Length: 102
Image (tube, rainbow, N blue to C red):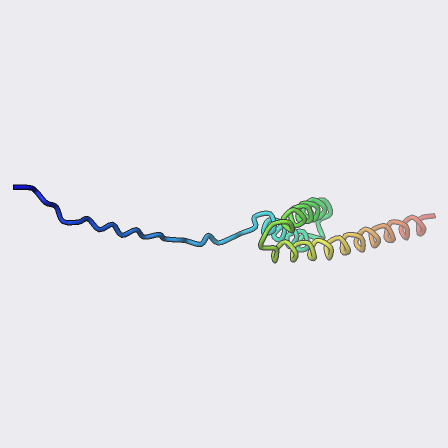
């Protein structure tokens, strides 16, 4: 007697999992720009955080998604404006103090 096996059905399932896209440079630039804005009263820390936030946001601008990179770039520009204003106020205060002593 022949040993007859029943037909074997193969069901192939393809599971497609969509990966969430993230932009690490954009997120890092945004966080550093916000920290630079928060610590704008600390001179050296502000410059370092602002520069790193600007650089990371600029790099993150060329990767998708771009939302936080654009926000980090805008906050970096605001931080740069605050930095120039603070330096101007500091220079004015030093010039005024020198003028008073003369």
